[in-house]
Amino acid sequence: MTRRIPDLPIGEEKPERMIPAPRQREKITIVQRPLPTLKELLPPVTWAPSRERGSEDEGAVRLDTKEPKYISYFTSIKRAIELVWEYPEPALRQGLQGKLVLEFTILSNGQLEKTRLIRSSGFTMLDQEALRAVQAAAPFHPIPPSIGKTRLEVIASFEYHDNRVRYGIAP
Image 1 (cartoon, rainbow, N blue to C red):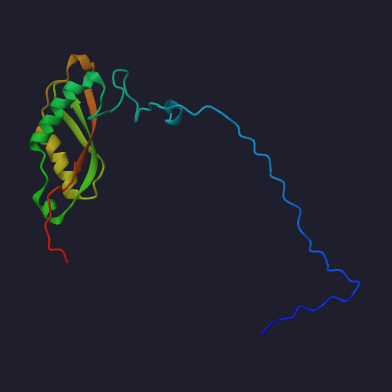
Image 2: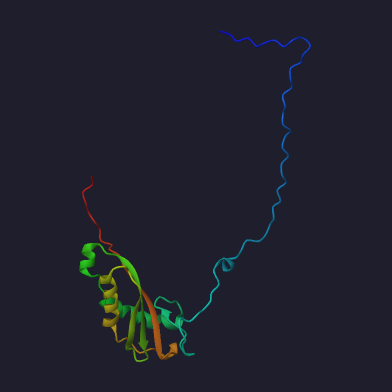
């Protein structure tokens, strides 16, 4: 079956199709500027004490600090804590894992003045073991004169990860 196109009456021309005018391209301007440096990308470093302190005390220091005057002393503190810190057996059986942050204060003679939980792991059992480990590791060595403080507030994080290999039967 064929379709026939109707003839136009004589003398009439085919109507012209309207063809849109080609769109002109917009001119794109590229502005060149230097890339920011790493220092410019990082947030500004500001120091704000958590509470009023004397001039000798500049605030809590992280146990993992890289500041040279603390490294040797803090290494001895970490070693003392690691010797008594344990993963509680009931927590292992239950598969409890987490990270917590503690703050503790050491006096000039190495005595532990106080401990405080700053951020919980979410499990009381893990939090209590970390607090117990810090208290059991005390007294620490006296604060060295090179640090220049008579009391030292330390912030430490404790991570509990169950890295045991687990075997099971694949379905």
